[in-house]
Image 1 (cartoon, rainbow, N blue to C red):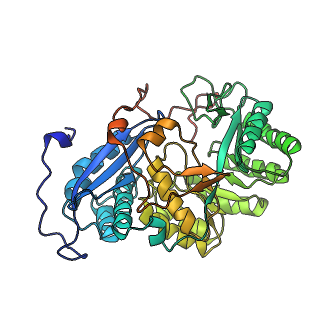
Image 2: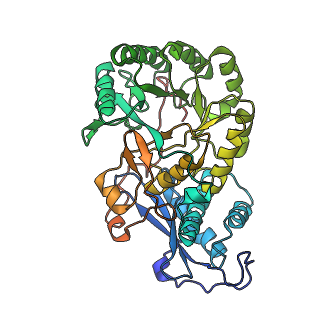
Image 3: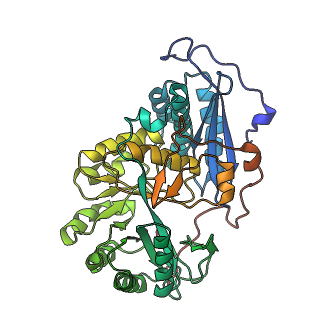
Length: 435
């Protein structure tokens, strides 16, 4: 049975929870889930209402492929567990929630916890009348450099899109090109146009098969084309997206070295972490990794052994702002830089949380950015702005972002033939491909 908050009253606040903030602490009165898709991307937002009239916080719990499961985890499990607790006790609430299901470290629980965690940091900042980055130690930079995506059906189209982005002030650009006759991550034969820009398109339902050998041949030629036409005035990035055999990814890294990539993203699946040491022995290309990590055991040794250069976790998938700030501090000790995952399926609320970390982390590397449409900016007032190739904070208290619930309700989740699931991608013989 699905929980409907409109059909049930807000339960009375239990008197028994520990109140480390004091008996007169502001407490969690209700935990609500708001699901909206103003840019046709499924986002899950948590709104924590407090016993202080008008005081609430927002957090991101977006797990685009399984949003309904996250909603259930929040409404039917975390909500009754959290009502009555002091909003000041962010760390205690995170730790208690982490073990509340006994089995842990999965994306559903982590995203549910993230929505709560970010919302509590938002509330903390509003109580202090400070932006969250000030609570994390204050600014160490004025804005966060970003990278954006250029894709195309062929080299000329990718070049056209790179030049268009450079004209808009971007100097860090991820390049992806379609592989003819093959399902290709990050590009398709005819890319969509939005606001004058051709965006990278994620996988769609298709009968085309993935051809890893053709992909490994075409990518070095793409970067040779871009470097020869554009020169060295732009930093280039590329995402393998874990879609080739580890040894092929190592060879591709060697082939790309002459083109001086800013980073080479996700060469291996999390299950293949053991190949990073071999990659380090055979290539000096900077490596970014982590968007599929949900458990600290997956990345701690990679950082400690300096086998990656950028950590790229999706912060809601690791549990929110609290674990992400600890991860950033841990990375600093090993000169690993941050590059938090920032696609469209990290909501504007998540981007605001990313930015709080970006501004306060001395080991910040770069921030993946989404160029939000007008509808998202109307639904989420205060969405961080991109100017001169960087992400800028509005310096409002908390995360600096709000949610217009009436507008959000106008944009329900779009229909999807497999309910938002990641589609099958297969080799020519029919074998499934990660991810």
